[in-house]
Amino acid sequence: MVSQIFEGINDYNIGNPSAKMRKLRPEDHIDVIKMSHMPFIGKALAQTQNRQFLDDEKERPLNNMVYAAIFASLELEKYYRT
Image (cartoon, rainbow, N blue to C red; front, side):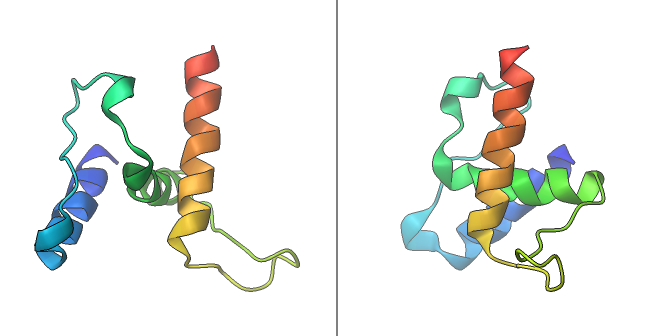
């Protein structure tokens, strides 16, 4: 999962050289994670948990990065609250 996050950020940085985002490292503190990292974290978490982002009727997958970011935020909140 971690390598998937790093690859997603690398791919983004290659495709968007004028708007590069900070690369994450496994030893980074939670405070260095930005909202722009959340979609990559969410996609990796969802894939490792075999989850999909579905519409309200749970019929069509939503491939929107916003849903991945929301999912990551909720998952990280659960993790760091314990």
